[in-house]
Length: 339
Ligand code: GLA
Image 1 (tube, rainbow, N blue to C red):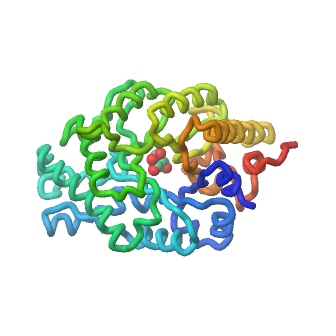
Image 2 (cartoon, helix red, strand yellow):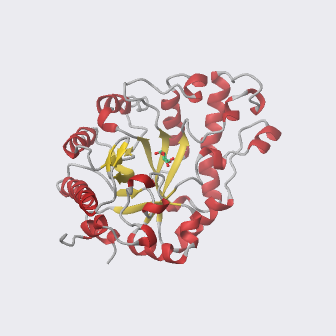
């Protein structure tokens, strides 16, 4: 029995962020198959990996081309019976600036609102068309349409999406995603520190409706890049508030560093135990809410396989350590009583 089977008891998938390297490594692939059943690409589906500058310049329209890494990951997922989360389309990070400029040339001026809306339409349409052409659509159950648009102070991030289109770029992103994505793919807004953005997030998702009051969005993604000193009561309160929107919620990038923000702690036995207790309390709290019908969630995704591969490796945030050793956090999730 792998960890994924524990999650399945609550109607959930257990997801993992991966690179092709993870899947091509025998030991890592075996561990992934044992414990996980959903994949998110750590990078290969991000805007800078799928937007084709040369062909955009040649054709005069924004062009999406899938890269070999992305295709190989989808093929692997299909061969091994994994589902996938798409990540991500409209974001300020890892997005080439040329998409916002006249003739796709950053030496020129930013395009006007109408042009950028047309480019957004084309970008969104091509992603779902390319998935369909490759017969990959069926792999995807969720997609982060927009990532990180809001700041903690309630203001919108001044990204080039915002600057070219204006505040309603978010509405248009979801309107177009709803238009081009199949019903079978849930459309997510994904962000971090929702504990500090809760009220604003509730207000914001209410605006993502069509003229008949129907939601254009299906779920809110909570990245959950956490610390063992974070207050889980505050986190659960946020989950309970967001759950009342009726939308699905998913933890999409979970990792839990030892210690606190800007003050990570050493990987002592004591701290690893605290981390194990944190993971367990978090996951149990989610299971309880799901079982009680208080929370709609169909997956939880962990951001990386092992500490030595993590983008936050200084905080040892994952459930596996070097050489895929099982950490106390792994055993806590597996349900063994900790010594
Ligand atoms: C954010 C993004 C992820 C990833 C991390 C850093 O959380 O959503 O895709 O880039 O930052 O690895």
